[in-house]
Image 1 (cartoon, helix red, strand yellow):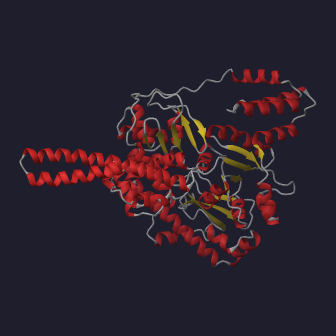
Image 2 (image 1 turned 90 degrees about the vertical axis):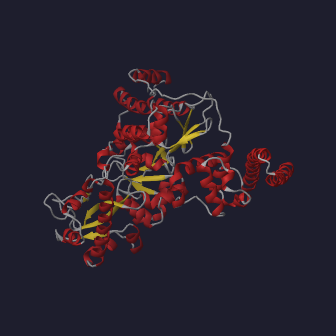
Length: 584
């Protein structure tokens, strides 16, 4: 079995906070989740899960790792058994990863990714060579050359076999074309006479396409998307995430719109924190992908019945994921963000900067939907609103919206609370799975080394304070490996992608980075440097003690064997070391 490939596929399909949350009650803490350690007798939560880094760490016991190590700990399993357990949860067939010719899953996946990339390039070239397509893209859709390049927009010609023949000439098979969703049911090109918009994963790899018909035809769907494939899962895909993620991080909010072209139009006017879940209802996977970048999610759905229903469905999902959900309302004269952008880009920016909390928005929509002069109208509004309110975890927030419903319906808070209690009677509290762990009060005496290494990972300006250390000053092969890399690359940041030399200890690097961000994230550079110097001195002090113990043993051996020359040499080393220890 290709366990590495299987491991990464399982990891990509699971949210670590969901798996850990089955065993440990977790609450949102900024970008992370926290709970009471299952490994110690602590009373204050110091057990953290980071969805962004896909790791967990227990500050009280200094244990940590990825989702696999957690399951191994709590279930008492070896890696293979933990992988099988999590694969079942993720719906991954591990037999696909057995290393045997046609069943080499990873190879097949890479072939399909390469095929999609070839398709995108082919469609781009076709666009350049077709005047009508260029006119549609540039004139009718108003897309600039730069945005066409950024999103790799192309065109599929009306010839139903042109791409298939091209792909076959490049060595791809019809089976591969079918597996990528590029062939239709009749065995020819899936996409014809359509503007092609590639769908990318979070790393920019093309996993499918959405295609907009160029000449509207009542007999043909306006949009045609890649079907479910090995690469593309519409319930997980967030359109535009690759292009938007930096803007989402820097603005600390994401706007979710309904259409892919709404996203593209917004990016064209440099409003890039916009994505879409086009072609499907919003899912937990969509919000979790975004929650790794921000906790502030703004919906821009239609204000019609379908839009209200979509927002209602999104509210409990957002609450379970732990994100703040708000709603953007378009000016009355516009049907979608694309129209707003085309009319006035500044108006679009203004609109997205004035969101309304989701429940408040829904209550406002209910007021327009129901006749509140009647008892039945008040009943319907309160029933719908209270279903949402009782799902809120924060009692202050609950109280705020109870007051709002009371104000709208004229019902007393006591009556509304009674209705909430009746609605909640059928609720069953979540049970957490039992864990097979030994509770310990032991602490890792070398945890300060992790803080020093983590601080060096997030702040290269402190690297000079490490210049007198050697890799052997750290305890254990993993710490020594990271320290050795930092010493060999002083001044270089580890904020970006991990260098190849550290891939084997990636989880450890993520853990020490997370620990350092938690402890030193809000500390200024001068204080960080002071802390680094202090930690280095502590590491050096411990290293000298270890060296002294070894020299003491060597001296006894030399004296007992009568090797006076060796004994004198060791005594000189000891004297020099003792002087250093006194000066430190």
